[in-house]
Length: 209
Length: 209
DNA sequence: ACTTGTGAAGCATTTCACAGCC
DNA sequence: GGCTGTGAAATGCTTCACAAGT
Image (cartoon, rainbow over all chains, first blue to last red; front, side, top):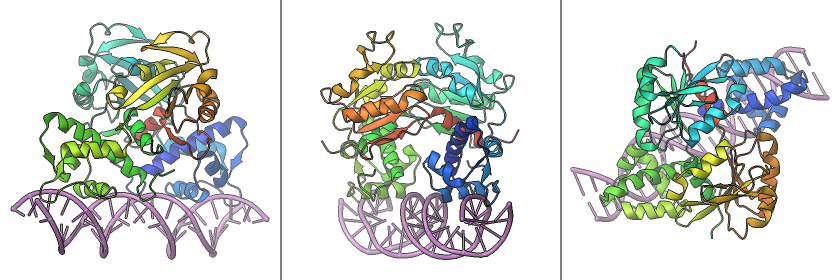
């Protein structure tokens, strides 16, 4: 699962926050930034920031800090968003349509290159500049479209079948919005986003009635 | 932040997975289930399952396992989903509309009781059985509507202002879909869902080009 | 004087392994 | 025989604190 066994998933997650913070900074082009400033912007301790960077060799100058533009490049390369990552969305319901229309992906290096559904009333319609294709065509299109990540936005009962088609087409990673555990070849990385789960976890912290 | 300092956030997250697994089981009404079976269904070790349960006193019988219906009740009570939790959604764009239409919330104890937006062209329209209200009315409506959780589905630039209104109205928790760190009174629990961040974390595990 | 990078210490979480119960 | 509940060991993660660089 992990590309580099000494780097924890929590570290990767924070790297993404650092990148977000640094990108906000970059507009102002201040030139240099310290680990404590990055920590403040990201809600993390300065020591944690430096430790996280150190797993990748460290890219600051003692007494000075980190060059904002270099830091942004380093983080983008580590997170593989220094190149375009191409994604397909399967399941053009409310959620799939919302994802297709979301401008935030393009802004951060992700490009939607295909929409798929199995519903004949949806196949053929155009959304956010893409014609919705039959999901049966998906396996054959992953490679020509150079897809690296597939997003699953179908109901729980069809999610595994969609995942199988993605794996058959050789996507490298899957972002799964359906509330089920997918079974995939172990070299395929899966991440789940389950809004109901997040609500349940929030509810735990609610005061007693 | 934590209700019970000896229970980690990761444990709460797993409890929600256990509940999901047990609910799938409950349909079949097998009567009893073992920690290893729950673990298999949830992708967790059997020892971890038992340890997690033990934080709440343990509710199994040695040699037998866990009564499925009792387990479901225990988990639901711990996660506070044994009672209805009432939520409002602010921001009726693509995402907010998708959330409002999602049937999975109601099925698992969450009830949407209000939709809000600041856009005059949206205020007044009806969606999933709810009339969209002006977000300015939100603070005054949290208590009468008995809202415990507020969901923020507005653009990043307006998310903090919405959070402030929620806090003013005294919601207990916020689910934030905007890619910004919210500043709130520290007794308000915030969880962030950032799809772009999930994509970035996935991209990290992608094979080199 | 200020900041990075990093071993070492401190803390948290997970796994182990087994006593006790059905 | 099989399963739970739980201290103890093992592992993993974060914070500390300081040498070294600017």
